[in-house]
Length: 163
Image (tube, rainbow, N blue to C red; front, side, top):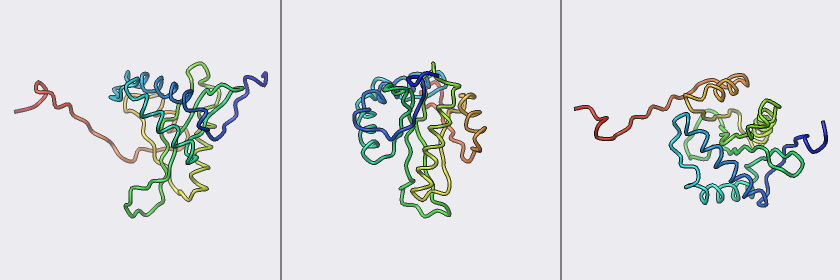
C-alpha cells in the first residue's frame, strides 16, 4: 500500500475545521435516508464551531490518508451533572468517507476515541445510531455495543394527531 493510502488517526487541529465540517455535512445528508431530522447545510456554521472547539479541547480525532481527512470521530466525558454509577463517555459523529469504508478506518477511529475516554476516566461509552441504519447498528454491535435506551418519536402535524 503506498504511503499516501495509509491512514493514521491524529487529534484534530483547528486547521481541520473546514475539512471535518464538509465531512459532517456529508454525514448529515446521508443520514436523512434513515430518518434523521438534522439539516445538513443549514448546520454548517454550528458544526464548524463544534469542530473548532472539539479540536481545542482534544475531543475530536481525524483519520488522515496523506494530508486528506478521510474520517473523524467526536467524543467527550458525560458532564451533565447527574450522579451515576459509572463515568460515562459519549462517542458522536463517527464518519468515514464512503470510498474508504471497509478498510478498518472506522474501527481505528472508534478504538482511539474509546482509549482517549478511558484515559480521561470513563468506564463506559455510549453512542447513538439511527434505528433504520442497520449497517451502523451492526458495526457497533460487532464492537461490543448493546442497546441501552430506546428513543421514541412522534410527529405532531395536525393530520397525525389522534382525537
